[in-house]
Amino acid sequence: MDFKDLLKEKVKTVDEYLEKYLPSEKEYPQIIFEAMRYSVFAGGKRLRPIIVMEACKAFGGDVEKAMPFACSIEMIHTYSLIHDDLPALDNDDYRRGRLTSHKMFGEDMAILAGDALLHHAFETMARACVEQGDIKASKAMLAIAEGAGVHGMVGGQVVDVISEGKPIDKETLDFIHKNKTAAMLIGALKSGAVLGGATEEEIAKIERAGELIGVAFQIQDDILDVTSTFEKLGKPINSDEKNHKVTYATMFGIEKASEFVETMSDEAIDILKSMGEKTDFLVKLTEYLIKREN
Ligand code: FPP
Ligand code: MG
Image (cartoon, rainbow, N blue to C red; front, side, top):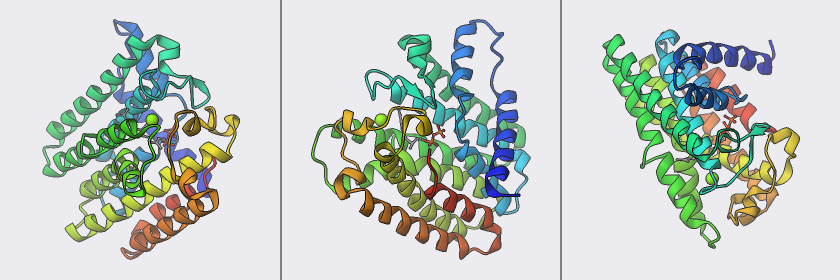
């Protein structure tokens, strides 16, 4: 089976579990459940949940036990995108080829749908911790909380927001990438690895690889913002220019930025490979990410 088909199958599995972990839209008050589901089922790549599952599997864990954590990280990711698109932040009308949450449901409901997804993620993980009664589950939840919180994604988002329109240096840009984007990918890798029973040494390697993959992923995102099309991205291109944002693409040019993506991915792949064949899928996923078009 080629890698794209393999990914499609995994996306299907993630979607089945998300269906199970998300409340039904028949519940009252319907509008909030509709808004939560509208954004979760908008056709995301399901990268973070797939990473949780595959990291768990790589280190010999039971993937079934990883599913509440895999789904929760996608809920958190979705909340962050809903809030990022709001008028007070990036003010975007399209995401994944569809109207953004506030365009569909109004700004009030979009804020609440984000809040609801974030809390539902922690409810789902806390329940899994109670049911599994295993310290590994609590550690997985901690890894995801750290990736999403103020020392991770939210902190990166803050620096991104206060840097808008300012001539920032590479150090600041790296802080933004490491926190806004890489922290959640590290959280995904680490939570999966912990659930799988990885050693301390393996977890340290996984964290370093996650940071490299995350920064490379964000640089690739910024490159695509310049070089891609609305059709491929599902959102307008040149949004960084619109928001007066400094990126690797504007700082170094597309060619040099692409070189950074490649060097970082190669280093991440070397680290993953140093742990043996078990990380094969994660290596293929990293290779796939640098060549992605959306
Ligand atoms: C696209 O992911 C997302 C990123 C490159 C990360 C951007 C980070 C933020 C917007 C943080 C926002 C934080 C707050 C607190 C508002 P993807 O390509 O995996 O998207 P997909 O799920 O649509 O495939
Ligand atoms: Mg933003």
